Image 1 (spheres, rainbow, N blue to C red):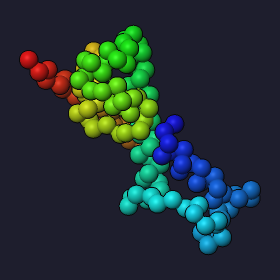
Image 2 (image 1 turned 180 degrees about the vertical axis):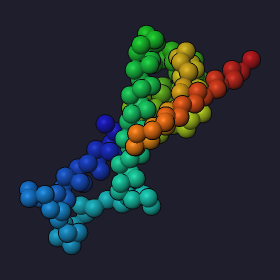
Image 3 (image 1 turned 180 degrees about the horizontal axis):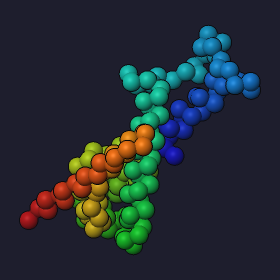
Image 4 (image 1 turned 90 degrees about the horizontal axis):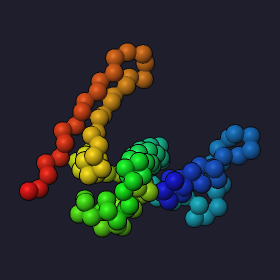
Length: 133
């Protein structure tokens, strides 16, 4: 779990009382509340969970291909630090970055949109990134 999500979850735990009620902001200790993005707490948590899920998939794909982090970083032309950020969920990569990363591992990327209610599923295969010659 990345540090952003840990901080948000710790804050949520601090706000909850034993009876399930939420502590009013005025009653909280000074300095407990941390600034959140303009999108708000729920969006911050969702972003962190998305980054965490993508990071897990990227790391699992690398491990299944038996590539070291150093070798994958070399193939991608990125630093090991940047690779670490992608694999530990501290950044939420763009779709292009995700496709490049997957391509370096020999994977394709498929985006599946599933309605919250029963219905059709939309699945789109992303094109493979163009390799530099």
